[in-house]
Length: 391
Ligand SMILES: Cc1ncc(COP(=O)(O)O)c(C=O)c1O
Image 1 (cartoon, protein in one colour):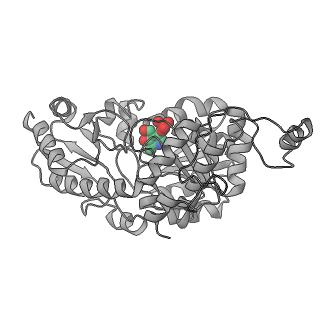
Image 2: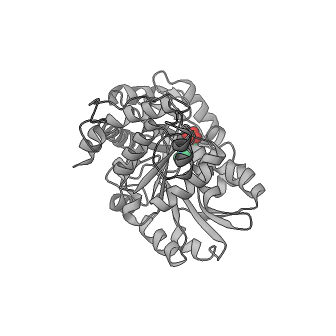
Image 3: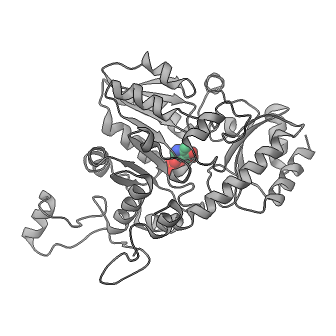
């Protein structure tokens, strides 16, 4: 079946053959009872399948995990309390003290802070390579202590694209798994696993939920990797998803197809509008012909999603005036919501970067990031025009 059908129906018409629900039940239980003392011991020993305690597993989380694995084309999935929990748990599952990981730049400011401040404290070295030249640059960074390659594509906030196929080829020659944060595009527009990427990471807070009302993360990969990440690491670190949030993400998935189509078509129109605007410098949108990686984007994505960025002429000060004069677009971080969210990465989502780190990552002072919502495009454009009037 096609993706627009799969997001609605998952693997079948009913969730449970006995109750025949057509909606996944919400299991709020933190704890499950054993049929007997022997039953409890067997469950702990893994001799039989069942639920013990929600940190170890829960039927609503399992439903979301199975659906995400199906939609992403992976063998298995794990759910997390947040996208950050998904990223940190994956790193700690793969690398030990004394190892190193190679990471693409730019990357979301929260991930950057984790990699700059915390990961080195656990004895794991972080080596950086430019996302655009990544396959070439990592050849010189990888050694026998490299245990994970962590990437983000499209990259937050500059919308640079990672060449999945070339990156996987280099990494696999050295037997290193590659993880990609696919939050910006989702499986709706790209399937990194089909290009050889090993692990797909999400902040489900964004497009999967779609309504800015729940924080969560998901990782999709092989059964072996999920066992390492979930059973051997997450269960002990403890950053598990709340069943209620899982239920919201399950509901969000059902409308993901129509939302993504609208995010994409609105973003294409905004990219066109901005590309002709006298107060705008460069625009960053992978499906606009002006994007330097337009051909690569089209070869590994089926749509440009709803994220775009642009340079405002006049830098940071002009950017502030622009944001302060908007009426409809919400000045806020996060992304992937039904409403248009707009922000200034250098002072907001990426404020964990120093001025030099911003420059190294290609994030300029005048960069504005838009998460294009699903409102009427004429109203969004009229609002952006209102912002430009004061600069
Ligand atoms: C690309 C990307 N990955 C991960 C995260 C972190 O997700 P969360 O806020 O759910 O922890 C974000 C948050 O903005 C993000 O943009």
